[in-house]
Length: 99
Image (cartoon, rainbow, N blue to C red; front, side, top):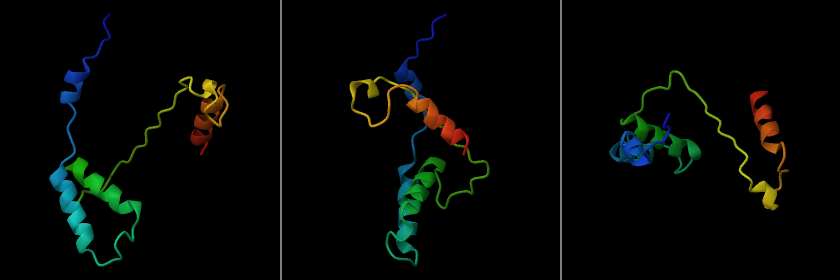
């Protein structure tokens, strides 16, 4: 069975964020009665959400999900990481899963 993926074809299937919706959200932030940047990263996340939803204002998030990707890739074995090369990733993932 051939499991090769043509990344160019796959990439063409991925919908791109809507920059006009992002700009509209940023304009809404600028017009809001609050100190500039007063909501910190929330403003950036709100503009990102507008771009992926393709609308501003955004729709409420009804069923949020979190994806956690983790892997060992050999870099720690080169001595450039402060974490141990063996078992460190698995322990950190387990800690996240345990809350």
